[in-house]
Amino acid sequence: MTTIPIPFRAAQRYADELVAMLRPYCHRVEVAGSIRRGKPRVKDVEIICEPIARATAHDLWGNPVSERVELYGFLEAQRRVGVLEPRLDRNGRPAIGERYQRLVYRGVALDLFICRPPAQFGLLYVIRTGPGEFSQRLVTQRRFGGLLPDGWHVRDGALHDADGNVIETPDEWDVFRAIGLDWIPPHERV
Image 1 (tube, rainbow, N blue to C red):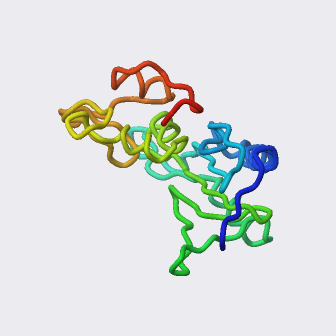
Image 2 (cartoon, rainbow, N blue to C red; image 1 turned 45 degrees about the vertical axis):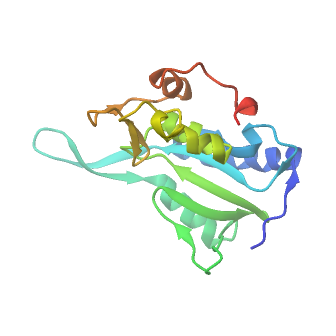
């Protein structure tokens, strides 16, 4: 599918519809990408969500050992009835996974990023808000021209310090604070 940019207001309307559809299945749903940055033309709708996971079995100590994520069933049902369609890459492959789904909604490209542990919502939100050059600098260590403290890295959607510890980043501000920067509004990120 060739993506044709659409006006911001139309993209925002589609994003709002999608957020409303996803909200019952998620702790948190946010619009990211060029819509969040307020670009006048939008190539795709990018949404990040943290699904609700319900324990379905527990071990002897009461710890959950399996869970059900109803969001996956909802998305599958929406694909079955044609509300959402898989969007193929240039090699004809779909992306319908537990952490990322490349879809089409009402003729508009949709990138759905699903935050599952160990990923941290705040970090994914910053990265997926972009733009790409800013996100690349964010995950690159300072000694290589990036914004990340030397020795730190990003793996599996989580920020890790030089000792390999996960830095909790439930919100976007936590990411900026952790790496020693003031928060930068989305439309000023370059």
